[in-house]
Image 1 (tube, rainbow, N blue to C red):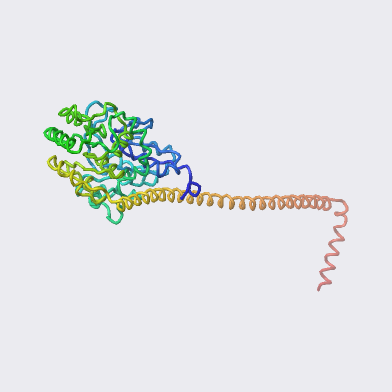
Image 2 (spheres, rainbow, N blue to C red; image 1 turned 30 degrees about the vertical axis):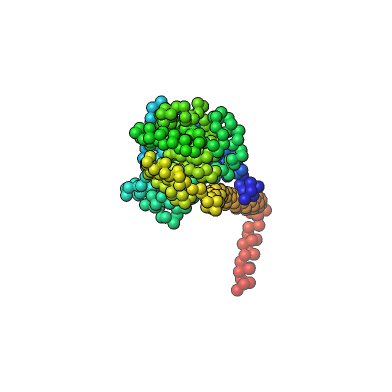
Length: 459
């Protein structure tokens, strides 16, 4: 479908964690614009906190304002996700533009409020393959079931998430679509990342370094052990080790700096605060990726970089993606596994990669279809109302003409009656003049005789 064949000028609300400097969450807008930008005039972003989206000049609105926004703006669709949004918990988060301290972050408001607003204003609601990280209780499932009835297209990013959501939604209504950031190598091909790579000003060469990322999930005791392991890997491979935060909301910087402190002359740490696109270029051009970040793992596989997911907390999202790409062996769950796991890293098969990419392509086509069909339905309903109004107006016009014709007929009859009344009045005057005349009185005896004769004759 091309722009000329579809309804133009769509106004879309995109809901997500766009207020935090977290690598994957900040890539979702770029992926959505790549696929649907041709059809969209305006994209309005909503997150828990009102701010400027990190590393951009894009305004992000607070989810608390979405109801009022939809009341006064034409909105053709609401897109939720991706990211780990579909749960009912609050999580600790670092958001420097909001507070210097860890704050309580409320992603649950994103999908819950979107559901209620879409129902209230009759706006199509689609899920952009978010994650469902935490099982719902029996009581929570009842609430979720009600909210999900307002979603017109339900997708989650892996089978693990589908299993969680199935406690509240018929599994047949849930479609599994790979996390859409997996398409980033299509959105931003590696040859377009050269300038970004050199702009980092990091003294490394492409494909001659190991990219390592970690966050607060790594315990204090494990950080020294990881440092020793990475140094051994550096000696064994002869490659540089780049310690790089991938986001700034989950304690990456603190952990990276502590690991670097054990071998300050051996490890490379960027002195610059790099944005998501610089980090993207560094992962895409690495020899290996090792990290706790799911989206680091996803991006590495998108660019076919050998990668190892350090899933210390045993998150279902990491397990789910590894199963989807058929690389479950590329996940380790403890520091002790790191060294031996690197020896066994395998690359994603091109056939599987292409298959997953096609599912993402189809996914965005479906999102567009859902929104356009909903909009077309609205146009048809408006046209029906217009036709009905027109028909009523036409009928009213006919009735007005008939009334005018009847009124004219009545006016003519009234005029005829007035003429008759006048003639009657004239006749009455003439009659009275006649009966009161001298002649009429003199002739009275003769009229009496004539009357008697007529009576006798009739006998």
